[in-house]
Structure formats: C-alpha cells, structure tokens
Image (tube, rainbow, N blue to C red; front, side, top):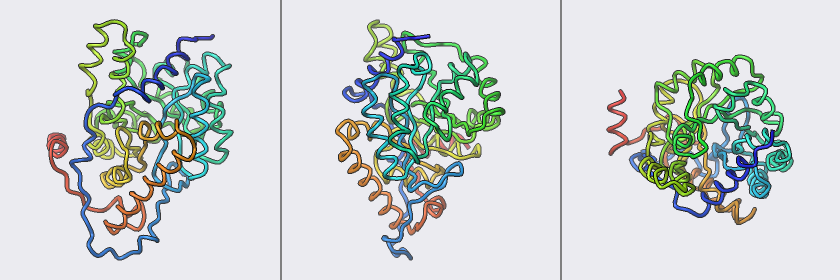
Length: 349
C-alpha cells in the first residue's frame, strides 16, 4: 500500500532539521568533567579508538545515528553518510523505513546505504507502532532491505503526541517487542528519539530481549520542536513549543540505562569527541551523532570526513589526557559530576 504522505513527511523533516532551530534542552555533559591525568603512562599516538559492539569490530565508538530516508531527495545524503561509515569503519543507522515498506518504489533511498557501505555495521529502523501493527514481517523486510546486521525499533511517543498524523496508542507495544526479540535472527536495539530512557523502561526493554538500548536523550533534536514547525494548527504548535525540552537529559539516561544492564548507545545532543569520551566514561559503549553530522553531510563527502576527523582527534586527545589507551580503559576512568545532572542522579539512587 502506497502512502505518499509518509514519504513527503520524511523530506519535510530533513529540511526542517537542517534549517530550523530544533535543538532543545541540555544533554548534561556540561556537568561532567573527566579527571585529568597529568602524567599519562601512554603515547597519544598509540591511543586505540577501536570498539566492539554486538560482536562487530568498529574502528571507533562514533556511531552515525539515524537521520533520514524514505523520499527520493534523501538518497544523496544517505549515500554520503554511508560512504563515510565505510571509509571510517564505523556503524550507521538509517531513518525510519516505514515509507519504503509502504511503497517499495522508495527503497532506493535506503538500499543506497548498503551499496555505498558494503562492509559497514548497519542498523535498520522501524517504529514500535509499525511493529505492533505489522509484526515481524515488516521487521524482517526492513533488515533485508539494507542487509543490516541489527534492527533499531524506535520509540517516539512525544513526537506522535504532537504530530497531526500521530498515533496516540502504544498499548501492547512491549508484547510486540518481546515477540520480535524471541524470534528474530538479528539483534534488536531499542532507541528513543529525543526524550530519553529511564531506568525503569530500560529494565523492561532488556527483560523483553533488547540486545542494546540507544537512549536518545534530550539536548539534541527535539521532535516536538520539529512538529511545532510543521504544525498548521496553532494549538499543536503551542503544544510542540511547550514540550520541546521534555524528557531525560542524555547523560542521566546513559547512567540509568547502564544500571539496568546491557550495551548502551548514547545519542541526543552529542557533537564533540569529548562528548563521546564522557558518555563512555559514564556507561555508554557508542556515541551516536545525527544533527552534528547532518550539515556536513549535506555539504558533501569532504566536509563530512573533515568533521568526523575532528571528532576522532578530540576523542583521542581526551583519552590520552585521562590515561586511557583503549575505549575499555576509558570506561573505568573517574569523573566529576556536578549541577543538575548530579542532582538528578542523586534523586535516582
């Protein structure tokens, strides 16, 4: 069944994210300081950024988080992102594949990713509502479409609540997730899209069989803010504005999700290599970026590769200055946590 409204919405989302002020809230990383090692017993040239995740060897913990797809005009940016993932040996997720599952003519905006990144670790993407409505068949098709090594099931209740076309009923979704995880031949990653994952929800997701959780906390792209821009109804626009910074800061969500057990991807407002270093030090395995890479990706391959190189340099320097020679060693360094992040974590204990 074709649904051109879904495809048009995907293009509209990309344009808004690239051109409108849709970042909202604070990640909490400004409240985190890595303990400086004035005499690191290592060479900065020997710092090793490689990281294993879900059985796959990656050249760094930088993850190109889900951004786009589902409209012909999104094909070029997905191709640029995929080439960078392949060249850098890092992981990448695609945007929601709903549009292509509704209309196979749109598959090219997603299949281009595997064409440009034949060996990269790729994550397919399907919404929890679509999983509930269509079951494992759509999940399998999403994975097969890009020959993915994993599937991200995204949670976006805030966006759905604001979006004129939104689905406001998530009852039964946890059972659908449990059914998929018990039968899937691929790991299932559950990801929020900008409002964070709490300890309680993380426990439920891991218990349902999630192989990893992408926290998607506040501090980056706010989908309530995106829908505020899209809204023609003043009441919905006002609602989007009011809830633009709703949720759990990314740093807090990383700590809570790590406490629940299992691998963690930190996304939501990360833009520097030091953000990735801080995220790993407090419990993440990978640091995902979307908005920070979107502008460079739209500018082309050279701009994107330059940005990724900058992020990697910052991460390597941060590791050296903490005495961490490997990503695993970075996980055990000491941190100072202050401000509202410290207050929230004290309240959570």
